[in-house]
Length: 296
View 1 (cartoon, rainbow, N blue to C red):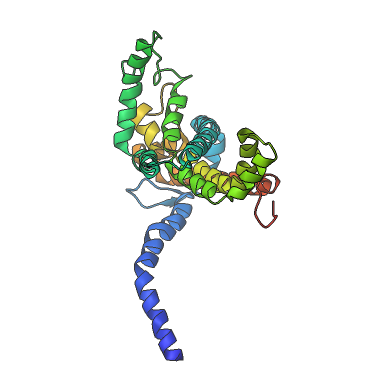
View 2: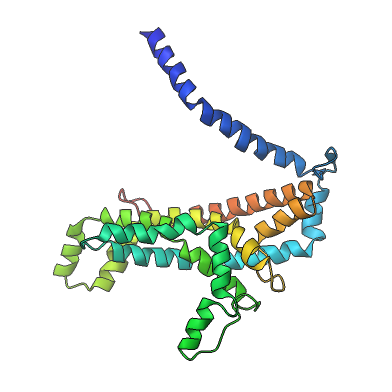
C-alpha cells in the first residue's frame, strides 16, 4: 500500500515536471541572476564585472530620468487603476441583470482584456487619437475643436490611461462573479426597509465586494507599475517625457544602451516599490475590507 502511494507520488511529479522545469529555468533562475547582474557592469557582450552598489548609487544620485519615470508611473497608477476598477464595477452591475442574451454581452465586454495589451491594439489606439484621427473627427462633428491627444504633455498620459481602462474585462468578470454570489434576500430586506437602489449599492453590494476589490486593486496596481506596450508603441515616452513610464526606462537601459546590469538594478528597485505599495494596501485593508466571517 505504501509502495503504491509512493508510485502515485512519482507519477504526479512526472506530470508536473514540465511546469517545475519551466518555473526553475524561466522564472527562478532569471530572478536570481538579475539580482547578481544588478551588482555588475554587464553589457551582454563581455563578462559581467562586479561593481558592488554602484548601479544603485547611480539610480538614486546620478540619474534624473529615474525620478521622472517614477513620477510619471506613479501618476499613471493613481489615475488609471481607480478609474479602471470603478468602470469595471459599473459594467459588472449592468451585466448582472437577468436579461435574454446577456451572456453574449458579457463575452463582448470581456474581449478588450484579451486584445488590449497587444501591439496591434496600441497601434490602433495611436491612429484613433492622432491629430487627424477618428476621435478628433467625431469631436469635429459635434462642433468641438481637435485635441492633441498624443502631442500635448498635459493630455498624453491620460490618453494612455484610457487604453488601460479599456482593458477592464478581467476585473469586471471577478466583480460580476462576486455580485452573483450576494444573497438576494439582502436586497429584498433593504427594499422592505425602504432603502433606495443607490443606498443598497453602497451599503450591501460594495461592502460585500471589498475582498474582490482588494484583489483587483493589487493585481491592477502591479500591472500598471509594469505597463510598457502602450508607452512604447503609442508615444515612445514623449512628448517631453510626459509618458516616460518606468518600464520604458528599464527597456531602454537594457536593450538600447545595453546597460543590462543597470537595468537589472532598476528592475529590483521597481520590485521593492511594488512590494512596498502592496504591503501598505494589505496593512490598511483591515479598515475597509469586510469578510463573511466578520474579519476586517
